[in-house]
Length: 351
Ligand code: MRU
Image 1 (cartoon, rainbow, N blue to C red):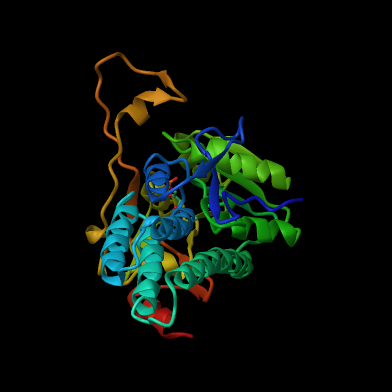
Image 2: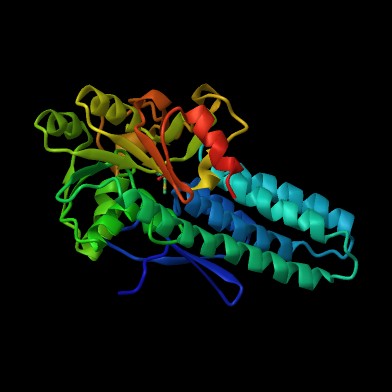
């Protein structure tokens, strides 16, 4: 079976799947320049923390190519503006700024070297974006291997949103763990929160699990607590959009409620995320910018209005789960347990 990926870089062009149309339609969209990439991230044609970082790295390459000047100072100024634009497309997932900064840092190193032509620099930048993509897939496989150790045979697992192949370069983080447990024949069952309002669970996670042949049930978001009470869930695992120094974690809205319910019911609650999702410049979750999106996305489902005309809705895209609710964080460098402040610091010292 061909590995699912949400983006392809081919003949120096970027193509993404318009995830708003999944699962019923797989439409590949060509992104011509950095403005197209910015809009695709902002409008959620592509989403998921690592995926928007990877796509922004390629957007950076397209932006670099579009600046028609041999003046390196002007080029630096222009590409910094482009990087800022790309980095501002969505505020919560730190992977976006992480990837853009990595590209910008490399550019700042390369530009003063006059022995390298602008064309050569362009090629090196493309290679770097491809490295980010390749590393992400390798990282997810490692997360899968570590994480599967936490999954008992026959486990019933609850997940929220989509942290699968579509949200990354390939394989998935939280879904990567589930996949690995499945590949190890652990006879698992997955409960998938539908994840209102974008329905990442019902539309995307179930699409991935179905194509992998993993047994699962889609549930409404408000069913999770009852299932826990009935002892039908053995563990919860989700991805993350930003993890700060003390372990507080931003993820899709509804994650916090799940974590509280899990603790109340003595069920382990795990986060699976790569190091690029950590923001050790922030001390606590209070500092994480939480995206607020249009209320229209709550009031309309798949283009159909579900509330009286003129009603207003509140729509936070994410919430922050305090570290105290998180049993462990699974990364490509291993599983991190509390106390998080100390152990996250150690994680960044490991090489
Ligand atoms: O709004 P989205 O769909 O970009 O939110 C995605 C999530 O919250 C995911 O759980 C997170 O980005 C981790 S993806 C590996």
